[in-house]
Amino acid sequence: MTYENLIGKIENEETGIAKGYDISFLQDVCCYRNNSEEIFDNLIAKDLKLFASIETALLARKEPKEGDFVEYADGKFARISVDHRNGTFQLSNNIGVFVSEYGSQASGCVWDPNLDHIKRERLVFDNLKPTSKTMKGRCWMFSEGYAGGGRGVYYNIKFKVWLLG
View 1 (tube, rainbow, N blue to C red):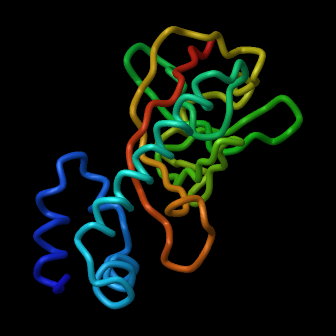
View 2: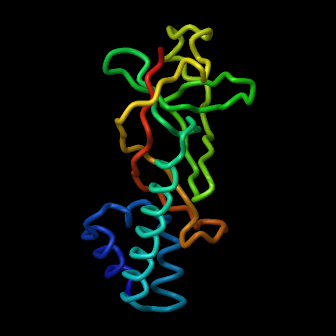
């Protein structure tokens, strides 16, 4: 596959996942090593299937986790950015969320100055109530589940929404 073909495949891929890869990773896998459009299509299909499996596993969990959304005021949402492991948590909308079938982990900006108005005393897991809502949120995983440099792929999947009491 030529670089131009690869760019065309990325731009025309319908789910949007293709734009979540590091271009040098896709070039290496689809143009240099294997030189095949079929490799691209198979990679996309595998990673979409893995994201779907991860989404199912995360939505089945009964406890709030990093990356989940919290409705802290009517119609206002933020994501759990840190579980302090003492019953308290932080919120942010400026985080990256790594996901796997075993859970999720937030990274990046864990303190969000735009959320300073929320009193810290409220940010206790016991104050979170489950809802039936979900929201799509950006997250990333390693392509095909294999860790390595440049193998991260970003995509939006559903996360649980919790209500802050």
